[in-house]
Length: 400
Image (cartoon, rainbow, N blue to C red):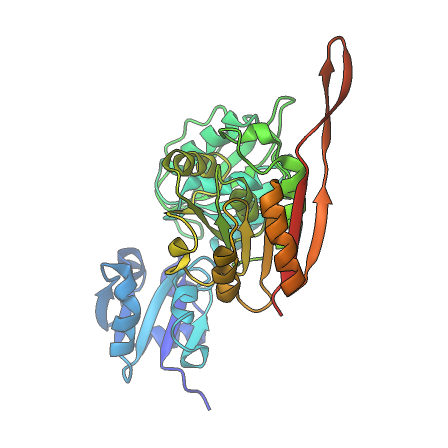
């Protein structure tokens, strides 16, 4: 039995003529049509009550539910489930109550015009989001398709590419794809000077120069890429720590005693849509963490002022917890209680006192204890020798 009462229809620049017969029939028989000004213009021949996006947009779900029992259509651009309103609606309204009618997405249209295999391309959006979140995807030879917001966004992306040694990257901006007024703008990042219409789709073929900044998405970025005051989880230990934390899509990390934010930032870089909350009582370090987050492409890092366990009380339940500083029995108890099933907890200790606590907790809860000792080669006069770092005792376990 079809219980759907809400239809979400993707529409392109060719308007009603581009819809499938079934989607066109749904729109033409609608009592209420909800969408942006552009969507209403593309379907202006249809007689129906017209509703614009609510303000604030978060009121949309309540507004939709209030129309249940009537023939309701939401118009979206292209594929309603690909970085679009359909996904947001579907997270709240049960899927059996919704019928989706997708149109070709901007990604598909842009890939076809570029002659790119969509399976080999990273698809991103900075529409209504910080542009810096694309930074982790800037890699030599990588092809990017990016949904943008305003006419200034391609220029900002070009600036970010150039700053990182990717100024020779080819850039193409498309506007109004599929319509009579379709436009295309070609150039390179370092020479980008086009003024393009708002709501464009940008294709970038990343090309690195010899001095390009290479930032892999796997954990273990060089320490000198982070602004810090000396207290940070160092590169080699950080790589091991992230391996035990196991970043996953949409997963949330609590980084307790975040310092410069290095672990939280690498967690977010390692998996799409990964989220992190950094907790620290030091104002200067919180500010450093926020600056590092923007520079390294994770502007969504949330920073919380305070000390654990008190600062943990109103946070969403985590999928992973890292305790890099300030470990105490009550901090572990609070974090362990909040951790989701199959969640991972990692605690690092450099002092004998913290190590003794780890040993007690390991005896009570099990898990894995590892001693990490790292030495780096450095000058010793006119020759080179090994300079050891402080050893780290690491305790990790999974909540079953």
